[in-house]
Image 1 (cartoon, rainbow, N blue to C red):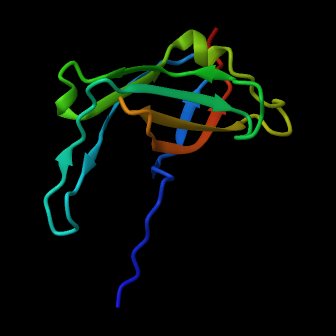
Image 2 (image 1 turned 180 degrees about the horizontal axis):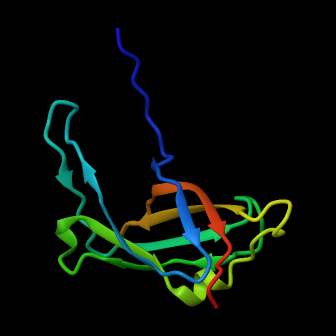
Length: 134
């Protein structure tokens, strides 16, 4: 018998960023199944809000940066987008050039529906590499 699980962690997707380069809008489709056998259908995002942050560690009080976010123009299409500007990635601190040039952070993207329920749709690690061209 197969084991199934119920999770509120969202999909794990790690990000690799180059300091000073834009993370162009990433589109994530949100779907649900009425029953395990049913085909997935888009989540209705009418009245929903989306937000996302990067922190050094999840429990840190300091926010490194906030993602730009938006919901589908037609909320019943069930997608969100998130991005970072080149100015935002340039401002993310990187490690020491000799001992640890890359820096690791954590992020998540949440959707709060019109009733106030919060779902994490994406989360993961963020690896930031220092930029060379200035």
